[in-house]
Length: 368
Image (tube, rainbow, N blue to C red; front, top):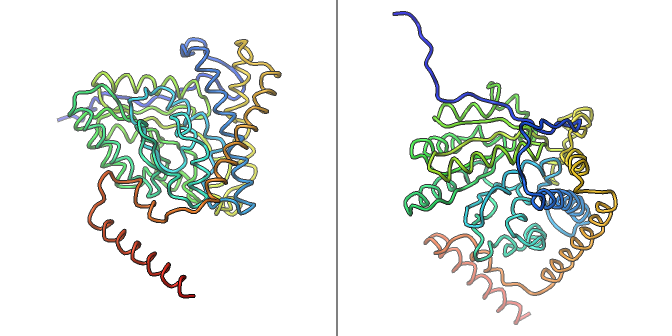
């Protein structure tokens, strides 16, 4: 019998709408309301300034280690802006901007990375999971939520974020496989920032794209310019609509770059060149979006100047509120209160042991 090619239902496309030189593909330009465009810009700029300020605080010893998001603003906001409040968002550990868009107070971020666990609490009514530090584990949680949505016959969707390094984890393939088999309403957002700490993307996989890994699990995948907020928004909106109408999951690879540190405990100069960083700085998502908004008459230099002043004031306010909270006496047992609706037996035991230890310490202090 002759060889014959197997027809697959999907092909991998690359999507770019607004390139780093400001060239716009008018035919692909998504119809985004002006108020959303303005809000996207404000949050991108605010996120960049917040990131810079947090780095200063960390270097001053006022907070602990945290993961900067510089360069990945468009990948996060372009995706999360397509969700409804009733949808679910499942982050990894570098999705501060996505969390802020969903309503997380900035002082909570500062509080959490200042070592106060209550800063990681998810406020009532916000359908988001807490930060997930173990690489890739949150994707399985997202699929579980998606299957729960199906079971309840709701039209909500789940969006989960992860990095290129997570695609080397078994959790990634298990999550995509389950989502594909059960057609769970999950949008997988891979922020391919080219580096898994010090491991380059070229050492993660021999595949030409990360998006093509969707094909093995029978779901559509697309690679987008992750520094083009218009392209990310367009791809995410299409994926959300697919999921919401019962057509299953999608994998979106946002081709972007981590312009700063992996975390503040990292020194990227040990493993990547300054020339590489400078080349990616030319593709910065914020200046190109500002140029686009200026051409549309939605932004001026005066508006940007006022925004910068307002944002600086808001960030300082968040810092003041967080430091006021950190100055008060806190209950260490709060660390057990923000992850599980009902504590499992193992954590009940740990909580009891911690409570006993605290009471013994207080007793010792009284006798000293």
